[in-house]
Image (cartoon, rainbow, N blue to C red; front, side):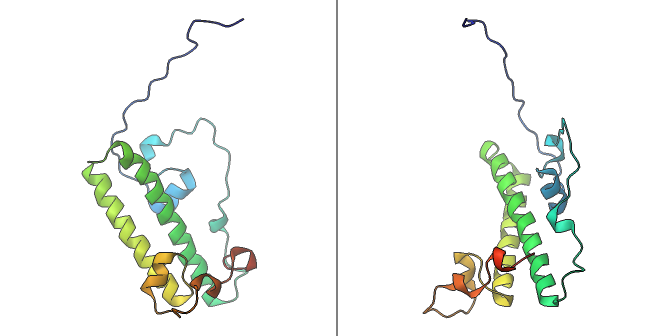
Length: 148
C-alpha cells in the first residue's frame, strides 16, 4: 500500500563560519569545521598516519612520508572548504583560508617535486625535470613503497 502522507520533512540550517580545526585534526574528524562535527556514533579509529615511523630506517623515506601526510591534510581541508564556499562564496574567512591553503599546497607540491619527484602536472612545471620524458615514471608508486 502506498502512503500519500509525507513521512518526514528535512530542514538544513545554514552553516555559520566557525574557527576551523588544525589540519591533522580535521583529517581525523572528517571535517575542518568543529560546528559540523556532530558524531552520532563514533567508533574508535586509528589513522594510518599516526603510526610510529620506527620501521622507517631511511631518513629520506621518513621525510617523504611526513610531506605526503601534510599534503593529504592540506588537500582534505581544501576539498572540505570548497564545499563550504560553494554555499558561502563571499565569506571573507573562508576565502582567506582557501587561498592560504592553496598557497601551502602549491608550495609543498613544489618542494616535494624538487626533493623527490613530481606528484601532479603542476609540480612537473615547477621543477627542473627532463622535458623529453613524462615525469610520472620518476617516482615509485604507492604499492611500490612510496609511502608506507
